[in-house]
Image (cartoon, rainbow, N blue to C red; front, side, top):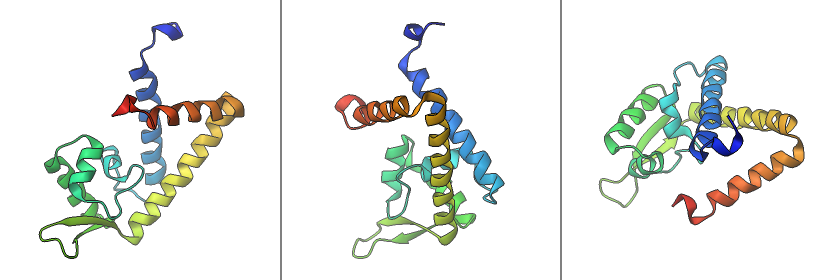
Length: 144
């Protein structure tokens, strides 16, 4: 298949899915055994700390009910706690526990390693260019 025949959705989705699978594999190997791919909807950048469940659901493109199921799971495993927002009746927010922070920072380490590998594979100049172009898309009206 030629480059021009590939659609942008696949070119972005396949590497993103590979990164998520690697994150879970390495997190599990590091002792965060309970984490599964669906949990990435909660733990993905910029993380859930001090975020409301509804905002997390919107960010992940899922229903509030589905997000609350993931949150219950992560709470049961000791990664997060849900607490009331001071001064706002019935408003809740998520806070990472010590274990949750440890998992989040392990994810950052894994992602830095992936970046080193991609930079070595593509060459540093091309990797910097790739990140710059992806950031340009991120910061544009193209994804809103």
